[in-house]
Amino acid sequence: MISWLKNNDALGTVNRGVPCESGLCTLCLSSCKGTCETWLSSLVGRKILYPRNFGDITAGANNITAVGAGYHALRIQGYAYGSHGVTNNSPDHCLFTNVNVETEFGTNVKTKCRLPIMTGALGSTFIAAKYWNSFAVGAALCGIPIVVGENVVGVDKLSELSGGKIKNSPELNRRVDTFLKYYDGYGAIIVQMNVEDTRNGVAEYIIDKYGDKVIIELKWGQGAKDIGGEIQVESIEYAKFLKDRGYLVDPDPYNASVQAAYESRAITSFARHSRLGGTDLASPDEVQKSFMESIGYLRKLGYKRITLKTGAYGMEALAMAIKYCSDAKLDLLTIDGAGGGTGMSPWNMMQHWGVPSLALHAKTYEYCKVLKDKGKFVPDISLAGGFAREDHIFKAMALSAPFTKLVCMGRAPMIPGYLGSNIEGVFKPEKRASIHGHWEELPASVTSVGKYPEEIFAGWEEVKNKVGKDEMKNIPFGAIAMYTYTDKLKCGFQQFMAGARRFNVSEMTREDLISSNRETQELTGIPFMTEALNDQALKILNS
Image (tube, rainbow, N blue to C red):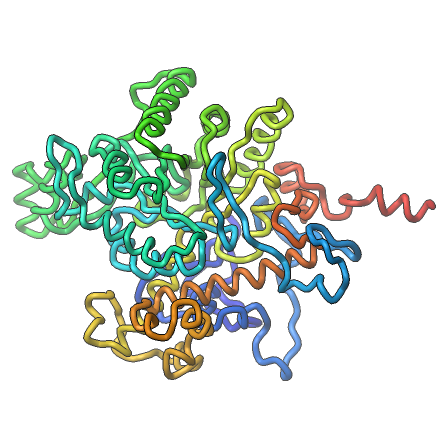
């Protein structure tokens, strides 16, 4: 098992425990006082791209050799000449700040994004609800898609159902309306559906209320687990409510023994689970038939943009997802590898099930190319599963280029939401409870950056210029932190792009990557670093 370093002395970042490959702590606390790279990026932005204490230090890389297959074992190729994706190729114009990192996805209706990233699905887990204002406003300001995950309607105590169909859901309305308030033509709000959401009539509700302002997403799975979504509740009355809504609740809150154990505090919580999809289907042909019927129904309702999210299943399921999205001409397919994050999943399931991200994503390219070579429509792809930094964005985009249009980040863009809310709660104690701030005073990790909001957040002034001085009072600090973090990602991504001489995302290719070990070469088909471009090198030497 590979162990990742828990601190980076060059950047001055520290993880609480041994981090994931993404660089995030295995367990990310909303109350955290820092200072992993994503946390600190949410304050200082692009400054974190460089080693600290300039003028008093020199720095050396500590990640040149890589053990085992993974995104960490891919390296980014640089070039000594040329420029691609730019009409003016003069050195005065070919600056990294001029790299165009905008992207778009979709079949008939194109959705524009200011950066090729999107959030993971933020559904019925309470942490998603608590910090949604920060997440949604932040995504809208950044111009990136955000996904409302599964089960939001089902767990909403105030939602109104009639005949099993949703008539009103204040929480789902809040999720969508918060994003749309600041939406300016870039990014999107995507609402995801699972078995229960389909039964509850979420698709019908959304199209009637919002029309084509919302993208609808079917869910086959995710990287963290291969069962349905789950949350944990402490109230037995809430557990009964969820069971009455049709969910599996474990243990059963209506069981007399369970009720007695709850009274004695032997049982203190209940897990609500969603159903598995497709249990009544016995073959790929049956899956395809059911899938196409579902897509046909959604189009009949009026949906112009439809996407699919699938998980870390085996190669057959991956091929089905790609082929059926091709047949249905869907707008986006998100493929989430094992190693992706969660709000609540069985821990050992996260550790031991499914195909890791790099292997799954390498096969994604292979299967998409099979369709392309046959002249078939290839759906736009979003890759997910343990991404948090700008190098992750570049590697994932290049690995499955030209099919990859977005990189899906789950846990990473949530961190600025927590951090900003904690800071806002210090400056606005009257709002602390409502915004779920944990701090009563700023910790040293924040005061070392600044003492007041305009000084703490590197992106403060940019956000103010975007929304206006008067509106700034309504912007959650978490959204400002998210904008700051995203600006760091953008700048770092532009720098990698410029070094690869790609001045437009559409110019990225697999040739922009090299493998640093043979295992990764074999897994991905990306050539070993000394073999990449070797033919061209020998041609020069023998000329």
